Length: 424
Image (cartoon, rainbow, N blue to C red):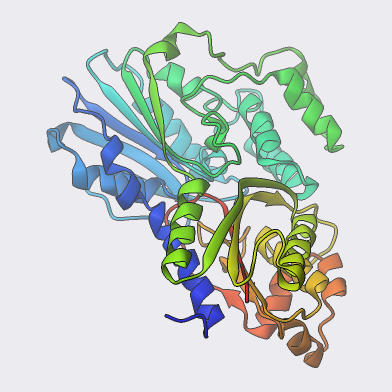
């Protein structure tokens, strides 16, 4: 492939990044040895079914001793023989996720020290493993989840709240597995790769508190029912902490991260003769602000060869947020890219792609989108005004009209946002 086709080049970098963090590539090396007793495989996340399938394909123990259940997003399933796969809703939980979580919690009861619980966790697990605390309804959790998604709260803040309203997250599932051995394998979708934040850490101890959870809800002016306020104020929702001795013998391994994806894309670009630079694997903030920052950097390179000389590729990852004020369609990658387009204003020689590595940008059917130097000119020809659509949070509508959405379908992994800018 040559850079005479920048569109195809950027698409190839995205595919390389996704392939580098697939369960097939990353999981087998981390499989633990078979135990004396049973092996129960549990898990949740957009990559959970693919991870379960890889476990079955590479398991070295007695297959008759292997059972389990994992829950994944609708459309993200995989065919397994021993491990049951249930699909449920994301990003707002539903009854299917609640029922799956209850079954998983029941499945790990009554185990012995000779048994192994292999827990497969990836991004999206917080919504998919939905089991509200005893005095909280699913409808209440759904309402709070929706409000958090629109508020602009970070993934760490959202998961702090989720842990303290749950009967299974924030280490509670880990406690329930005792006295079995517990090995948790994680595909990280969170900036900083903090294991306990990924899918709200169902098997890992939690250092955050009910007080912090309540402060987050107040920070974003999210109204909560009296029973939930009392749940947090009383400490009834407190999670097990890192000093709990049950966790001392547990193991966890982060098997794939955004850094892995970015490194693979950078290597592919260099192999094609293009210098590649990674800004960060953990960029957070409002998607439109991050778009403006990336645009400013791209123009500095294009105009002044600073801080890097063109031609080059600039890569970044992390998880941006969108504070929803409009009524348009669009995930955070489409919002980022629309802000970039608006700021670049047709600057020559700059191409960009922004996609979610799970293949779904927010709750839409696209992974993200791509822009080229003539994007804004083509948009004007269709009567599209980037500033207006950005105000309406309608990045999806903008790039759909131009035919520039990237639709990959579910990738069955998830290390969050992938952004690539090509400056020629």
